[in-house]
Length: 166
Image (cartoon, rainbow, N blue to C red; front, side, top):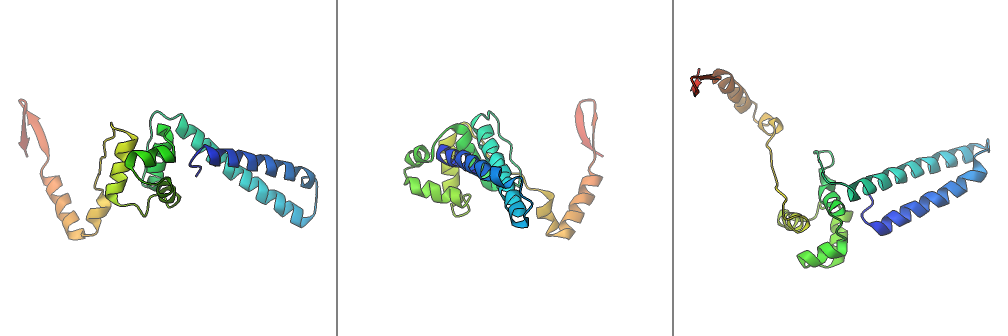
């Protein structure tokens, strides 16, 4: 994942270099050349995906996250807010290198309190919503079975504007 404009510039330059290196090898039938061309084309595609992701975050007005990409949530929010790592560091009073380390590790080493502090610094209008999913209940199957039975028995019906338990 590209984290800042400097890395964006490096990725764009890498694509240019790889594209130039591909030209003399593209007509070759040598096995090693064919494998090299394939590897470089794959790397170019990866870099293009990262560039597109970064550019879409810079222009984003709304972000949506799932559990699959939750580790990148804080980084994506920082990029979308237009704040640099240095600006974020200054706002929460830590060294810029600390933010770089957090982002390098996708905030796995940051405490929950630090992540909340960073989220607040990135947006004063942010609201965190935590939803407990069925997977947590599945750890205790007997509780889930009881919950399902209770839920089935407690069907609600509305009669004359009053909710009743059937």
